[in-house]
Image 1 (cartoon, rainbow over the protein chains, first blue to last red):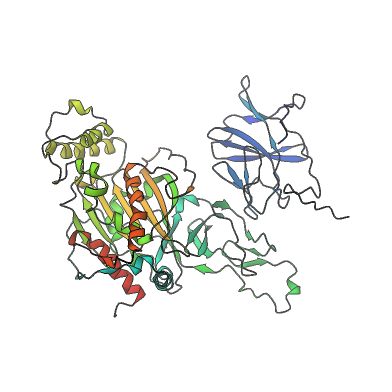
Image 2 (cartoon, one colour; image 1 turned 90 degrees about the vertical axis):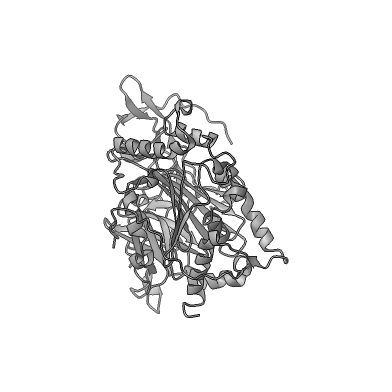
Length: 132
Length: 426
């Protein structure tokens, strides 16, 4: 797996005070023309793009069980810590964003960067969907 | 329909004893695939089974799945006061509607071809419906099974003509109402695939005769001889006195290490306890009641014995409840879909939560193979022994179970199984 390089250029965007959610709750936050899901668990805040990689529909109304959020349409599950798919029908990850607490303002901040989504991406298992 | 709590006190009167006989219980009931298939066809598909906890589906659209034998079921809160149960199967081509686990849905759309169903199971949408020249009638829906709730649990029954859950439970709601099951929260949730027939597990917990052999440490803290056993229409119980030594224990005057541990658990320095062995139990009972009342828990419906003792209830066919005033252990013993020598042991622990106090976070369910994890000393001792029992039962030398009077809950279970498998008029 490629080593993660810290992004020091993309700014952190404040999304709400640290008490905006109770552990186990989530909220959809609009950013530009996009939206993210901000999730609070007992061990902290997490943020994912508000998109299920199975059908591109919104993920945010999904239910949190442990570290998993499940898509309300077909039950695909994703790990909120890194966006990795945990069950079919999803097999591609969704973008996850670094989250920090601003100690001065006591606000949750998300380092949001618009994800790039390929129309027909290479299957992580090695097949290629592009038909030429 | 929610069955309301009835009783104000748990009846302690001794039930009359049915005639159960003394014959060997044939081992094939535990080892043969043929009997396993009979059980599926005539027992499991006809009884009320526990699906899970109603608190796992607090909001409309919340769902969870549960597995029993070869079947999977989808349990959903369809309305604030209504829970429904469906076979977890798309009527189009058989795909499972949802993966195992919990979730939330506005509708149930099958991921295969996008057939979509409302929360009440009715057909909502079929893509390209006009290509089904035979039509897709409105009855093309999720197949529903009877569903009800009691004790904070959701129950389902594969028999569309099933008696009501209230009838099935018989005396149980009255007996257990004083414990206020609705105030209990889940604190542990595991499933272990055990290498034993489901009945071997039920048997192990339905008799206390084995404590001297498998759990010798418990002789320091409970009476395994003077145990009241009550057999009801289907279900049964025994009441295990705790907070005292067994009559088998060599020193009847000793405040044993086990009793000292119970004092410590209650917040008492054992070295400061000056009473005799016989004083420990009433002391613990009085202290427990004071402590429960101080935290706002209503124990007014529980007698003094219930402050210490295990009121151990068996709900036919596969639910074991070790019930104490502040918490209970719950075992659901499910048959394996294909192998009579295997089962699924669902282990849950519940704690009673005072009003106004946040319950503990719902534990994440985990699944394990036999022996992968420790379940605590007592259950490790049971689970160590069970596969050896199952292997021995498969021996050609072994003909059947020789059951004594103290083990008669086992015989009662088999008699009730026979009512389903062979009929009550056999």
